[in-house]
Length: 83
View 1: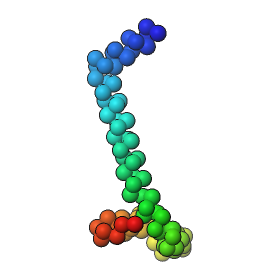
View 2 (view 1 turned 90 degrees about the vertical axis):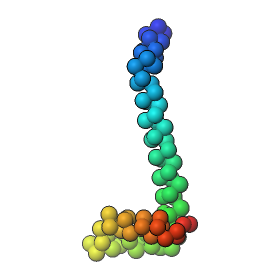
View 3 (view 1 turned 180 degrees about the horizontal axis):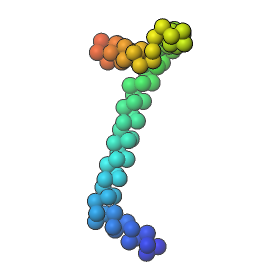
View 4 (view 1 turned 30 degrees about the horizontal axis):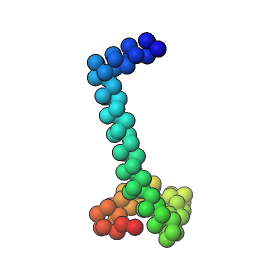
């Protein structure tokens, strides 16, 4: 147990514990933002059938996923077309 305590103290003193906590917080907020933005958009795309149409265009090589994703992001984020 002393080794664990010593290691914890080292992390505190060196600032590594604070850095780890900040990285963890950044990961958590990033995931929360992704979920808050992506889930409603995906729901709308699925419900309208648009996601399947996009997948077909990509499958048939008439579109690429990155261009489609950028188009969707622009439409939902800039136009205010939020689900």
